[in-house]
Length: 132
Image (tube, rainbow, N blue to C red):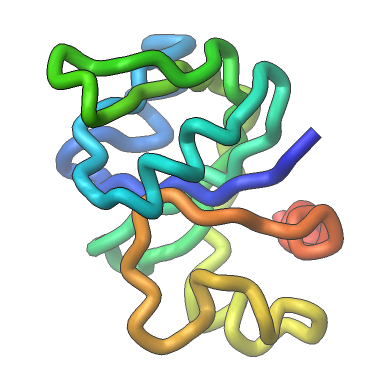
């Protein structure tokens, strides 16, 4: 099992939308590194659902991969399906992530980290869960 962080602007698709829908196809990613990460995802992998460009930006809930990568209409790009697991009572803000011991090397806490799909270690995942 692997662990991931997937970013979405709440105005485009939020944790509330995922809760309502139950599952969704994660498509439209137009970064080769993020696409390659999606191609590594397996059914059951855990996902930190991250609200970007929000007040505050941060982890808003959990999802899991429910269908492995497959080509979009343009076969250069891939999509996966994710399903809702849990909404957190409050967003775990980026500032909180940055100040939490054990998350110093988490990709999302790095300056200039803009990838919409990024790997998370099991330890980082567990630390974030304890914050929820």
